Length: 247
Length: 306
Image (cartoon, rainbow over all chains, first blue to last red; front, side, top):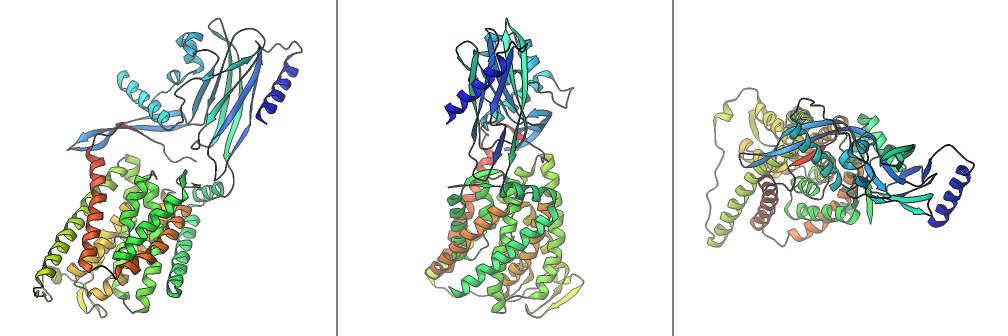
């Protein structure tokens, strides 16, 4: 079914690109909306498109930016305690990249940094602007390492494959623990060590179903949720007691 | 089979959770303890965020205490007046406790404080129980008659605001149960326990209550204190996972049934010795995690998302 989808999608892309469009790159992905249900165990996003000339393609999925605090434990009286911290106000919750060639071969570091291609080139600036550069480097590396361990930042660059010279496709795995929110899929057309064309399309990941409703309820009407939780507990305890007596 | 916990925001094996509920329920049925002090560390070991483990366990204890207290109520083993004074203290203590919890969470020290509280309080109780049950076992072998100490007067009996507790046959200062209630309330909020393991010895040794009413009265006040903790945690930190609490409860009810059938086959001091060993094993693991060098000294903290 996936191959049919791919073929169909690619045909659609070709159909839209062929009449001498001025765009050098056109790309899309499927699905556009990912529903996280209670039995969600991760999914795969298929990315595909076409380029006008010979060159390379890089695809990046990055997810909702939020504030992340990185803490460092130190030994104190024989015990490991959090002692220093650094906050990164705008760190993507999720980041994955795929490219048709190793990204370091594609373009110099400054170009990769400008477009935030590759986890090493993410623009992660701490709120503590006056912290020593070496410290910032340590905390930034720790942020990336912890995210990678959680499966939320890619450890390897995925492979973008070409069908012929113009059509490309790749797929990126999204783990079960992917945070909900608005994501952006960026596709870059790289030629002569420069990004000559780029396209951004949105990807929404949202919780659907009972789990989502419970989460919303717990966060938006916390007091009612708390009272309901107690009511359920009291009822369950009473039921258990009744069962005890009969049994 | 996996199930997604909406508040913990993680996918867990349903049988692991039911099994944990069942195992701890079995022990509580066998030995007659609440089990919160075992369940909260177990949840943390299973990967549930400590804040969610504490908030959810408070909610589960509400349920298990309700079912526990009804049995004691039928036998008339609840001192309502004492329970009320204790829970007034407990309300104040647990409110302070949740406030402290929220503050510590912001400061990044909550995991450490939860662990160290377990090591200190549970460790002390565990060691005392092990010594006591060891002595009792030796005594049992020698079969020596022990002299039982009668009512003893200390400075605690000189405190003002004296109150009569008919059911407990006591005439003591209300400050004493108020203070104990408040102290246990703070611990209940921070450690995600009912606090019975501290409340019961305090009632027997500090207040001098008759053992027949101790467990029922303790359970009675635990319902209200853990309900308060559960409510405040839900409001302040959004860390009460109802689905997790219900799953634990289902396992716990079944486990407790089986446990109470087995309990008739073991002697009291053997049960206490067994509990002491389990308690010390949990404490040992927590202490090891505090002392051993972590695999990564850096960790991430994401403030509540909206």
